[in-house]
Image (cartoon, rainbow, N blue to C red; front, side, top):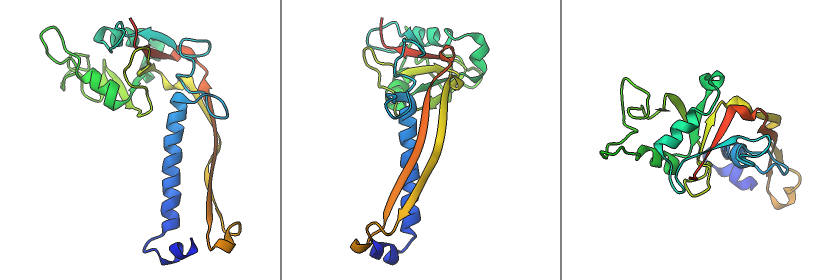
Length: 204
């Protein structure tokens, strides 16, 4: 309401605009992974294993991530794309599962090391020498899910047709002593170079 804008102890309109932008960033992050392509971007995982989509590398277990599966995933990409490649997964499920991987003597494979970026002595910021990107919208570890993506992000093309903007509409609800905020953005995207990205499936 206008009364709220006039009486607030801080610039509430600017605060609302900031929160709208934060929400737009979160929505965009979700769409890049999971968008269905219907009036929105086609996400990376939309048609994994299909045409114009990342090829599938299986974990080797019907229910779990495995160390061998992660190695197969990283080594499945042509070497020319290694420089820009990274792992993408959510921290609470796949990240936790990777951190708990152990060898036959019950020693953690994903340990805090200093001199090596291998799976056995990796820094938390890398896995098998590749950077890690956390994404809360990646699927959890579950049978037939795709909890990990690996590859060069340049394989996904994102188009920002209209950047996020906010219109302050003062007349449309003026008789109610209110203003209305209208947020808008137009983005598109899809996997255009599928050979740069691989999707890791929980499957034997």
